[in-house]
Length: 329
Image 1: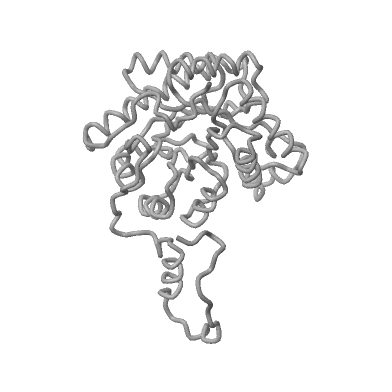
Image 2: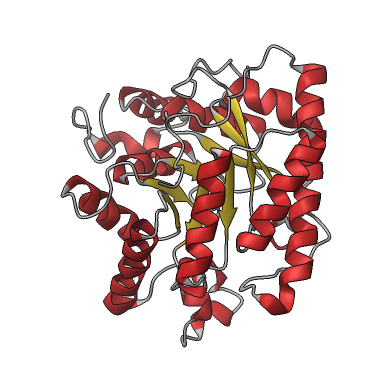
């Protein structure tokens, strides 16, 4: 299968003015091993997690050890298995003691703990990100000094026991993957791609996979055919919001979950929360809110689990502690 950037054959553009259909483009995409469009028949995905599972549960916005502890308590109360938690405020806004505590809690529970890389344009001194046309810059890294700071964030997280980080910049993704290959960072470090990265089609997501992405958070508004096309082009797990925060669209898509699993597995069922405040960056001043939101996300996860059991009882989920999870060490 050709990689992105390798072009099979050569073309003659002299007849372009006479082209009246799209088949030539669709055929070319097919020769690259990519879908020629978004499939209308929504084929079953035959791809799986390494343990054979089709779906897992992710609880995002787990902002510190107190929130993680509440999430684990609520998961036990709801009898809901959680496979991964993620955090948005960033590694740099956690103390060493807090990161160690989160790592210990994750290790004991057998779940992946993924923390966002700290520096980002939205919290920097630039002005483009606050302009209406510049908001897509928000999670990117501005300049090489910020790249260095981001790598230092990751080095620190790994030294404190974490084995999963959230990345939202293509350059950083490439660099960290190169550092893993060179032995500068742990080989088992999971590079989780943030929803803020933005690629929204099969070609772009495959490029993320080639750059080293271990798991990819799709934009929140992709249709089932669009998700199916991405799945045809990629092997990596997809992290799919089935309920999105208001500032990511506020979509509530629970009844679509069984079909998402069918066409897009392996996938993480990701529980955002509509009608809730943006708490980034979090801290003691927002801790009570963050804890309440964490508990409610787990309750929503129980609702998602019940819908899967009701409408797709044969769909397979992972046991706790699956070997490919970025469980802290």
